[in-house]
Image 1: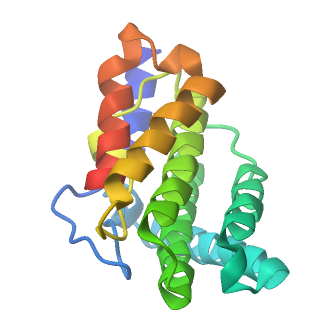
Image 2: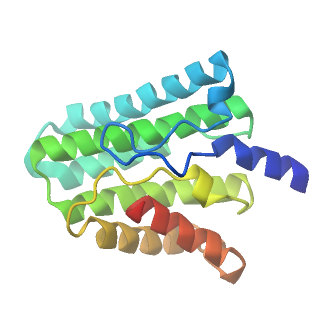
Length: 195
């Protein structure tokens, strides 16, 4: 069982040296770049993630309601069914997460949204990702290799992002914030919010 889980963890491996920018906040996982079919699946995931953000924006369409937009986006992301641990699925999911982060930053920047609020939105989405992957892989996550880096580094982003990540994970999947998982949990929040 452990060798199976260890192999699955490699599925989400992101390059630690990837540049941080709104256009590309993380590199494609190595296993997803290994073949044309997994590259296509990852690219499909990125497009799907961007589409989830666009769907939420079509409902709101008002820069004065970014908090409401974030709520709808969170519901859209959480509605994405994640079951199984195949390479194909993990590559698609990795791409979806990256696409959401990229497009969310695009909307926030276009609206001149307040930096702390963007940090909270990313922190909440990252918490959802952490909880879902922890449940899927029984807490066996390698955060250095999976979690996308932040798309922005404006003032207040990191602290607001981290606070939301800690609070949300403690509510949604407290069992994966206990001492047994403490290092993985804290590293996941730090990477997501600070790069």
